[in-house]
Structure formats: structure tokens, C-alpha cells
Length: 115
Image (tube, rainbow, N blue to C red; front, side, top):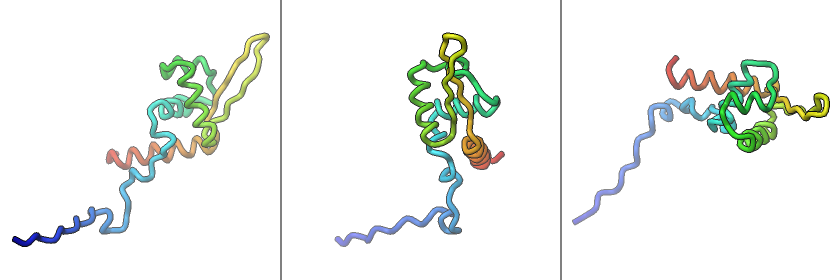
């Protein structure tokens, strides 16, 4: 009894044409749901207070802080800390790089969805 040699799978149609699926264009940073929600909220406004952002996307302060750190390291957001009277206030805004990444990510999602 002889074994048949394994056949290599034929490449996907995109690979045959030399183009990649659009998913390869998605931002790994923005792909995570909480970071996606942060970027979505910030894309609609110039700046947002930490507390308002936390309430808008419905996460704890510690979860928000961790995800803001990742976005800040990527250069997508700017975090400003100041005092209003005796009270600390943290505000967050998308940077130009963040806006560009957000727009590209959304355009890619639309392309994948066929919109």
C-alpha cells in the first residue's frame, strides 16, 4: 500500500493576485475593544476629561488608565494633567497621528464589510 504525497493547498485568490486581505491593514493598537471605544469617543470631540471618558465607555478607572497608557505609547493620544482649583483634572485627546490611525482603521473596516 503506497501513500499518496500530500498536496499543497492552493493559495487563496488574494494571494494568487499578490494582494493581501484588508484585515492586514487594521491597527493592532485600535483592534482591542476598549482602545477602539476610547478612540471612537475621542474622535468625536477635541478633548475629554478622564471621568467623562470612563463613564462614556463604561470601564473602571484602572482599565481606562492601562489602555490610555498603550494608546499614549503608540502616539495616538495626548494626556494632560492639570489642577482646577485644588482638584486634579486629567484630559485626553487624539493626536494627529491618532486621528489618522482612527480614520485608516475605520476605512479598512468599511472595506472589509463591503460598505
